[in-house]
Length: 247
Image 1: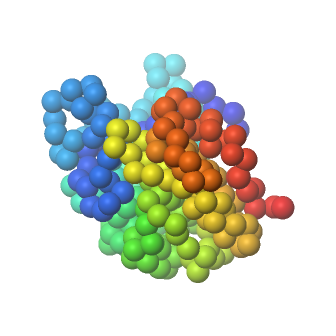
Image 2: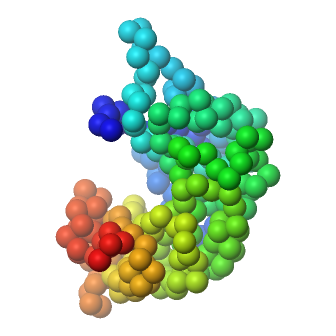
């Protein structure tokens, strides 16, 4: 269903770093750029907290029915600092069955203990992406992820920090895999060979794969490229390695 909604929903802002993928966090980088007064590792509730339940003066929903709502992309939805607010967010998600909520997390091991009582085998309108950046984090998080009651699940590998073999975790129920390099000053390298290797694992299992962005420090055929932020997504698309799961 078409929708005019173009933004995300960030009920809180700020996060603590927990693993190597957090080193050059884009949230911290953005906060520095805009000279945000509150430290980036301090989680604060935002003015957008109640957005899914908000209506315009006309009586229409602020977020139109049929929208995909990318949730908590300036923090982590499972951050312990936000435990006191999350139940209300679950309630809004359940209320707005006409929306499709998507959130990514590095804290998937917390999910089982903070699910709402009526979660059952998952809400139909919530997709959870488990983020892993290297083989160790994949070994720690993905077995837990696969055992949780989730209706829609994706694996997010970004920033991709090494060549990864996740083939054993590409089981039925994984709806897609997305991968990309790291942006910003001091970005660690991402090698195109790693991307192709990952895509081939997905193709073998019939799971869609999306190359999201090259990152700023990209290696292809042994040559290192410094790619401006404005071109990192378009260059990934030009690589033409995405797989729709149907070939």
